[in-house]
Length: 187
Image 1 (cartoon, rainbow, N blue to C red):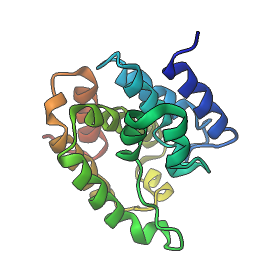
Image 2: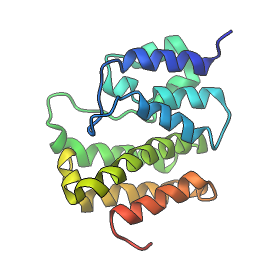
Image 3: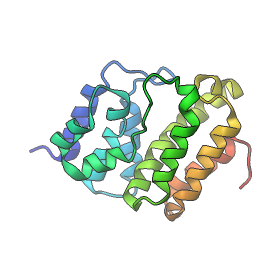
């Protein structure tokens, strides 16, 4: 019998079918890596399901109602805390700062479970960024809606501050190391 996590993996595979990341990799690898990272902090299958589903509402035709109908209220709520309002009709480069400010405002007072989801997601993103930064340097930022590394640093360093309850976990330490490495800081 399959559990909620297995169901979420199958759902995410279908939702992200054919999608690619900015670096050209197969998209589903990111939510799977996110769930793997979160799995180093918890064995709660609903949290792990939310980790693998975290981009479905934001980046696919899947709706918040689809998540609620298929995975229940708790998973839907967890996914909602990872979903930005992309503001259709507004160029992403113009809405980047406000979207990040809104997301950070949610993160600041979130539960430890939501902070784990954020850490899994952002660490997966920074691992990818670090690999590409090593290959092409500062030009890697040209791929992003916000191309200024100082703004990217502001975002990631604020996340570190807001998730500091997780500072004993290896994932947090790796995230902090990558922020310092990519943005050439010594915090």
